[in-house]
Length: 111
Image (cartoon, one colour):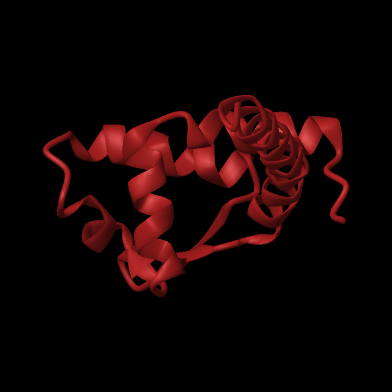
């Protein structure tokens, strides 16, 4: 099981709480993109996109590289793997709870 460092988990979960940042991560999961490409589907200002990218970069979820006059973004997925490990632990807990509930209901509806 992946054990997330508490500080890294905090730094990862905050950026994921925002829909545009999740959409940016989803687009980067398909491959590297320029800042212009990342901003296309959003109806928000260029400074707002830049702010979202800075938040993701500070969280260690992306890196930006200069490419001519623009910037290219690349997803860094390791922090997401750590967060997924943390979530998986609780998924197993809830699956166990649901299995117990199903057994209870099965036993009490057979009467």
